[in-house]
Image 1 (cartoon, rainbow, N blue to C red):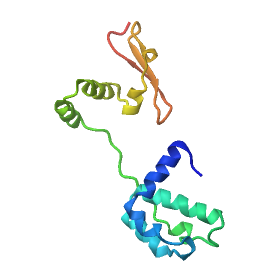
Image 2: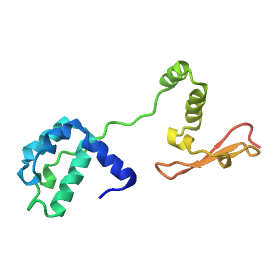
Image 3: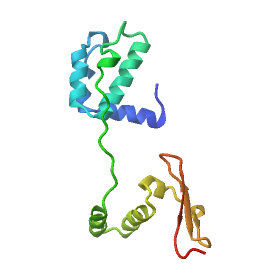
Image 4: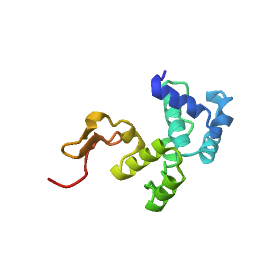
Length: 152
């Protein structure tokens, strides 16, 4: 029922090793312990997608009641997110032999932008007279204007 990028994500999820023991089972013959075992063996992504799949199965009426009640699902615990350090960046740049990729990494570093943000920059993003680069962060939609050179 999924299309495009969502379909690709679900196909990738189907290859999750933590879900392998569940794939051969009939839905109505699956026990809560099997789901909880898959959750223990999996990642945050396993938890999120298995929960979505479980809710879909219940909503479709393929199960008369949830295998795992809402309150019994383990909490989704994301790891702390962080940017790379200046030392990590220095080592990355020193090790990179491809000059184009090295320039790309430097651009990400100096703009404080994600790789996706920099990859989507166009000629219209740069105002050479004003000395600015402007773009919208893809993840948050926040506008960014980066200024270089002397302030006028």
